[in-house]
Every structure is written in structure tokens, then in C-alpha cells.
Image 1 (spheres, rainbow, N blue to C red):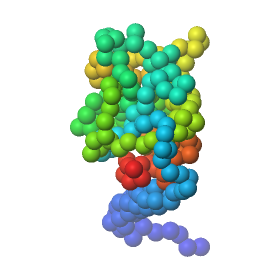
Image 2: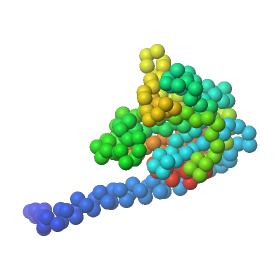
Image 3: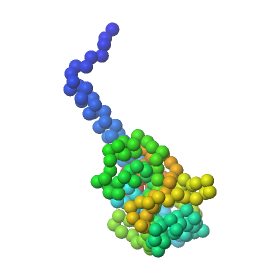
Image 4: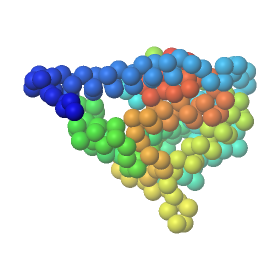
Length: 226
């Protein structure tokens, strides 16, 4: 019977180096393909409807939506009294869903810890919403406007509502974030390398009927469509 033999330490080292690169390469290839295959390919922007935005900081894409529009009022979940200064309550909010430890521990990407990244990649139920108040947003280089129908916006608002983890009284739980105009909220969902912050944003748009890639784990996979 032949036995498996390790010819040298270098063989083992090459294997340990090669496999992670192969896995990462396969993941990136799938992300590229998934973000280029369209769902809802027949979608066109509504002539009349609700203006929303997608905004990217280069790593994360968030949705900017009106708080009160098209019979959908999110102010029961995103309340003025949750802010230290209710005067900062916006006409709109930028909403991002993501991994709790990464969000809480890293106001900038320079603050990101390797242990938090590992937890996010492997998968964690520690997920939160980051919500920042915005007043009368306008398009920018990193912020693209999308006009959806009122029906589509109601579908978007329904998914946003479903992302909140509510207490027994049906109320959202707000926690301090990076400044007086933004808060974290307890959220539903499991974060992983296959269900990232950008995947969540893409899924919300896709489920509302907007044309976007079938899988969008990277920010460019979302922004390329708008």
C-alpha cells in the first residue's frame, strides 16, 4: 500500500499558500459574474414615482430613502426622539446593513480589526443597521439617483422594515453610532462572505424589481448598474 508522502516543507507551504489564493480567486470570479448577470432585465426607471439613491464609500453601498413617502412612513421605527438632537431628523435616511462588530469597532476602515473581518467572512448573527439622517439629498459622484414606482418603493420599505429586530413591544432599539445624526439599530439576518452589506442592498433593489446583478457582494457590482 502506498503512503502519502510530503516531499518537503516547501510542498506544504505552497499548498497552504495556494489554496487560499484559489478560494479567493474563485470567490472574486463568482462575484464578477454574478454582478454582470442582470435580474429584472426589462426594468426601466419610472417616469413618475419616488427618488431613492445608492451611495458608495468604495467598500460599502447604502440606500438613501425618504422617511415618509408613497404611504410608507418609517418614522415609527426611525424616530426623532432617538436622536440626541431631534433637529437633525432628516427628510431621508441612508441605510446600510452589515456586520455588527465591524460597524461598531471601525468608524474608518483603518480601524478594522482582523478578528472582526474573520468573523464577518465566516458568518455571524451579529448584524446591525447603520442609519444616517440626510436632508434633501442630491446626486453626487458617489451617489446615484434611481426613480422607482410607488409600488416598487413600498416593496423596498417593506424589506427595510423586515430588517429591524424589534423588542417585545414592537419598537426598534437604537444605539449610539459615529455622530449625532446617525445611529445603529438591532437587526435581523446573518452576515457572511456570501451575504454582505452590498448583497443586502442589491437584494432589496432586486426584490423590488429594479435591474441589478443576481449577486452583488462587492460595491462595484451594485454601482455599475446606475
